[in-house]
Every structure is written in structure tokens, then in C-alpha cells.
Image (cartoon, rainbow, N blue to C red; front, side, top):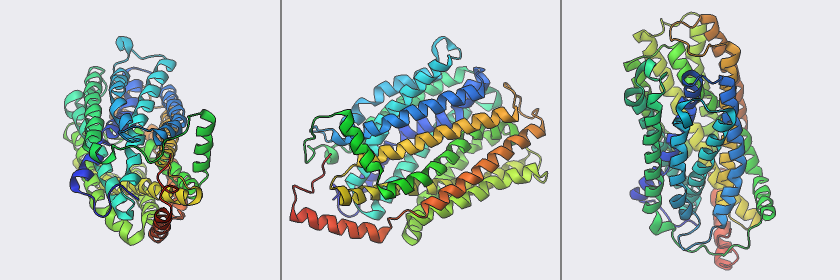
Length: 478
């Protein structure tokens, strides 16, 4: 059972959610700015940069399950998760600054970029995996778990949007600013401070709830035992189905995010107020998600909410590109074009976030399914598995973007408005085709997720009866 029964206090929702700001800062940096910074500003080949970032994500993804297992096995008077949240943020901040201020102020080598990116990813995982693993520990309620994720996603997106807004208005304003190196260093320093404050502040705010000795002291750690436990957890049927759908959804998200600045600059030719409005529109879509996802989960359940939203997001995301390639779109850069882009973006991004939050909340229910089968809870393992899926997918998405840019032969140091339309058409053709395949795969698998509200509540009742009958056998064990 969770630390808290019934409705969660508002303060806890806010404090827990605030820890996701660090993830939002990272996600905005990696997904929106890192590729264009290293490619268009530092002059590295887009394919080379995307390959380095993809490899870094894959390395980190396979480290994540170990972090999750170690988090599950941590045994201190501050509990299993808090020590990680107090120790990891400071080295993360230094690695983040180095990413945006490469030694010598010049493009690093392939291995140099790879090493920095791996360091940032692993340290961010050491913050995010323990933080999100607290969700199923705090509450076992089907809807309250969604509520915690609503606040996590609201905070994460808010942190990312704040960084984006500051980037567009202060750190590297306008089209020219995004193609200059100086503002990215300040972007890195400010983001590092925000990461530390969010993670440490969230941990301190939850200290009174989570700071206690775990029910069982874990046995000695060994890599063989750790990988055996990880393999057993990941063989859970519900997790495998989630992983298949989540992988496709996250690849699509990573590709879309990393394509955004290319599309905004070279296709829609945003500048000035139009560019600044982009993060504002994203924030409005996050607010819309915040009020939409709860009713959707109550009426449709989490699997159908995710699947239907994946298809809806695809339709609204691709419609502007189809009209543009077909020659029936208003002149890019004009007010009519900008307003239409943002109208479609508002709906597609709202539905896209519903997919992500539904999938993340679904993972919480796998914890009890695994406990019923194996007699052991493994929150860290499953949420590190979620991160493994997400990072492999995001790396694949960024890699695909790099290859699409390379295939379309978009030159380095391109000027907005001067890119030939056939180049843009080919770039959008490959993007739209890939996004369609990924969204259909995601919807196909996510709607088949086998745990609904009724299954979850039945399982909680069985586990509760077993715990009352034999408390020692059914205590939370790492």
C-alpha cells in the first residue's frame, strides 16, 4: 500500500511534481537546441552529431536499469530514493554546463561530445529514476497516480518552456541569435542552477514522507543478481506490451522535437514575435492537457486514452506539412501561416502529451502486477525500464532527424527563406512518412495494455488481504 491513503494533499502534488523541472530543462536542451547548436553553430555534421547523441542515449539507457535496481536496493534512514536526489544534482549541473560550453569554445571531437552527453544522461537518470519511482510508493490509487503525473508533466514542461522562452528572448534572441555561440553558454549555466534547485527542493519537500528505513535490508549487491532481477521484472507481459507501444511513441516524440527548430526556421520562417510565441503555445497545450487527461482516464481508461491520442496528434501534426507540400498553404512567415501553424500545434501537442502521461501512469500499475506474480515490488526497475525505452527511442528519434536532414541535403549555415522548396519538401516527406508509421505502431500496442482500472483494484484487494494475513512476507522488499 502507498505511503498515503485517499486524496493527496496539494502541497505534496506540487512538491513532487517540481522535481521534474530538471527533466524539462534537459529535454528542451537535447530535443530542441543541441542538434542545431552543434550542427549550425559549431559546424559539426548533422549525421555525426545525431549519431553521437543516439549512442549516448543507448549507453545511458542500459545503465538506467542498474540505477533503478540500486535505487530499489538502497537502504538508509532516508529511505530508498532520497539519497540519490540529494547527491546527483550537483555533478549533473557541472556536466550540463560543459555540454553548452565545450572546452576551447570549439566543436569537440565525436568522442568528446559522446563522453559529455553520456555523463549528462547518466546523472540525470540518477535524479529522475528515483524521483518518478516514488509515485507508486506514495499512492496505490489509480486516479491519484495520474494526478501525480499530471503535476510532474506540468512542472517538466513548464521548466522546459521557461528555458525555451529565455533562449528565444534573452540568451539567443531571433534567428541570428540562435546561430551564434555566445548565448548557449548562459543557457547552460542557468539551466544547471534550475536543475539543482528543482531536484534538491523536491526531495526536501518529500523528506517527511519518504525518509524512513525500508521494510527489508537488501542482500549483498552483485551484477549477476541485479541483472537477474532486472530480466525477471522486464519479462512481465504488461511491461513488454507497454514497451512496444512506448518505444514507437517516444521515437516519434524525439524525432518531432529535434525537427522543431529546423521546421520553425526554414519551413515556417518564424522570427521575432512569431518565434517567441512558440513556447507560449506549448505552455497553453500543457495546461489543456492538465485538465483533459484526468477526465479521459476516467471515461476511457489509460490504454485507450493513449492510443486515441496518438492517432489524433498525428493527424493535427501532419496536416500543415501536407498542405504546405501541396502548395495550398499561406505564404510562410505571414500572419495567416503563423496562426494556422499554432492552431494545429496547440491540438497536436496537447494530444501528444496525453499519450506520454498515459503511458507513464500505466507503468505504475505494472508494479502491483509484478508484485502479485513474484512477491516483490520493483518500482525503480520498472521506471528505469520506462527510461530505457524512452531513451533508446529518443536517441533513435534524434538519429532519424539527423539522417532526414542529411538525406534532404539541407546545407550547414543555411539562411531562413533561402532554402529551395524541393529540399524542404523532401525533408517533410521523410518526416511525415516516418511519423505516420510510428504513431500507428504506438496506438496498436498501447490499446492492448492488459491492466485497466478494474484489474488494478482487484489486484490491490488481493495484495491487501495477503499483507494483512502475513505482514512480513508482503512488505515492500528490494
